[in-house]
Amino acid sequence: MASPQELSDFLSSVEQRAFKQAVYAVRDDDAALDIVQDAMIKLAEKYGDRPASELPLVFTRILQNRIHDWFRRQKVRNTWVTLFSNMGKKSDENDDFDPLESLSAPDDSEIHQDGAFKLERTQLLESLESEISKLPARQREAFLMRYWDELSITETALAMSCSEGSVKTHCSRATQALAKALKLKGITL
Amino acid sequence: MNRNQDILNPTEVDQFGLTAAALLREGSQSLPAGIKDRLYAARLKAISVKKPEKVRIQQHVLANITGNWSSGSRPFWDKVGWIAPLIVLVFGLIGIAQWQQDSRINDIAELDVALLTDDVPPDAYADSGFMGFLKNGPLADAEQDSLDSSKSPS
Image (cartoon, rainbow over all chains, first blue to last red; front, side, top):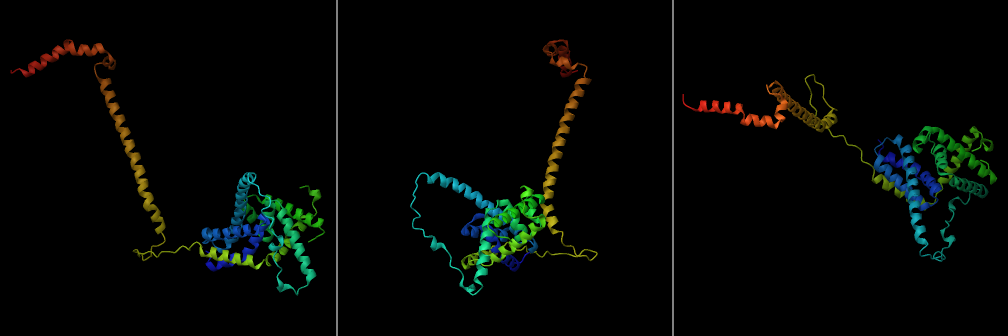
C-alpha cells in the first residue's frame, strides 16, 4: 500500500511528463493542467491504497482516459458552439487581443549557457513536440507510453486496452512518421 | 504503412524512440514556473484526498483447548452471518411449496381412489338423470324407510 509520501514522490516524478503528454494531445496548457489535476485526484481518491509499484500503470491509464473524456466533451461543446455561433456572430470581439502579451519571457537563469547549442536543442524539441502533436492519437499514446513512460509492450497494451501486436504497429508507425517528418525539416536524431 | 517507405529498420526504430524520449524528458524539466506551481498545487490537492488506508480493527481472540489462538476468520463469519439466514429462508420457502404440492396431489389421489372403487361408475355423477333417480327413485324411498324405522320406538 502506497504511503502518502510514496504517492507524493510518484506524482512529483510524473506530473511534468503527464502535463506534456496532455499538452501534445489537447494543445492547450490550461486544459492539460486540468486533465493532469483530475488524473492525480482520481488516482489518490480511488487507487491511493494500491501498492506503489502499481501506480505508474494505473496513472497512465487514468491520464489517457481523462484525455479521451476531454475530447468527448469538446466534441459536444463544439456542436453547440457551432450551432449558436451562426445565430449571433460578432467578428470583432477579439480585435484587442495582442499575441505578444501571451508570450512568456525566457528564463534568464540560463543566459550564460552556450546560446547556439541551447537554441538548437530548443528548436529540435519544438519540432519534435510539434510532430508528436500531429500524430494520430493512438500512435502518440503508444509511442509516449513505450519510450517516455518506459512501459513494456504488455503494460502498454494493458493501458491502451489493445493487443501487443497493435502496440508494436502503433509504435513503429509513429516512429517512422516522426523520423520522416523531421528528416523533411533536415533533422536527424 | 508501406514497408518500402520505412526509413528506419526495427533496431533504428527503438533507437529513435529512446533518443526522442530523452529529448522530451529534458524539455519537460524546463516548464514555466507558473505551470510548475499549478502542478504542485494539484499534487497537494490530490494527496489531501488520498484514499485512507484500511485500518485493521483488533478483534478479541480467545484461546481454544489446544492453546492455539483463533483469529483471522472473522470476515468469513461476517459474510456467513447474513448469507446463512437468507439461504435458510430460501430453502424453507422451497420446502413449504413442495409440501403443499404433495398434499394437493395426495388429496386428488384419495378422491380418485374413492371414485374408482365405488360401485357407481364415475360417469354416472355427470348424468343429471342419475341425480334425479337418487332423489326420487326407489333408492330414496328405501332410505326414507330406513330413517323412519330408526326414529320409531321399537
